[in-house]
Length: 356
Image (cartoon, rainbow, N blue to C red; front, side, top):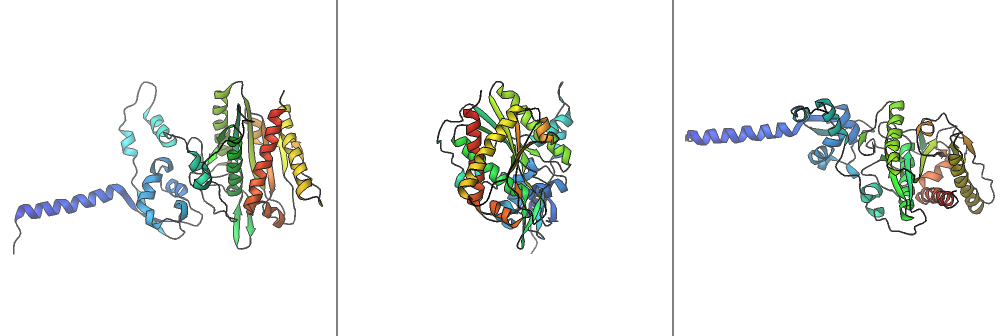
């Protein structure tokens, strides 16, 4: 039986439009490599991690792992590029189209909430005191994004510096806020939060506040971090401002190291801050491990990029050797990570209380 011509045309149009709509949403499938996160996958294929992250998740929700992680070997659909939409914007007297495109790709409307920074379990920040009211802290965890930093072997697992430094940084941020401080977390992960697992999954989706893609180049990455800190620093003229950056070293697997501290050699304020935190660690180690001496040190190291270039007095903290079995216990046990954060906070409270 022949179908009426208008009905055939209508069916054809519906079929064509459905395919056009689908084509506008995706550009095909790509295979995730080991260690890939959403951010790095989008970057590799010329997409914008800030603008396209949610679109990617919506297209691939059924194929994603916990916390929107990618599964190595799986194929994922990519959203279409939206560069053409940006290109149609007319330049103004003070901003070119290229500048507008860059701004669109690196800014977000709202900062990460506490729930995003600390995770659903720890997202509620309940005031405990006002001891740090009036203070401003910039917290920077080492590495992040495409650079995992130092990596150690833990049984059949790998431990990445950036994941553990970030977890301790997030814990420190929360406890500082609980004592009334204003805290800016410079490197942020929108879906990790504070984690209580021993082995923290490696990913690449960290960003630099407010929402900047972390570059692969080492110097460019450090410059991005310090620029973010120094821009914020200008908002709080006259306030008590300090910068703390947390790292985990990689040395010989047989070398057990204590927590040690660096400061700028021409910053007496930074030296005093480092000493105040060091004193807390000395006392806490004496109490918790009385049978062994704590040998962590305080020393100048002005050659470190963030120590040299940050406007706020800075302390660079090395938390241990990620390749050493004993030091690894400091990181893989969640209570130990919390203890590190608490002891640093205690030193910061002492420094603020004794300021001149």
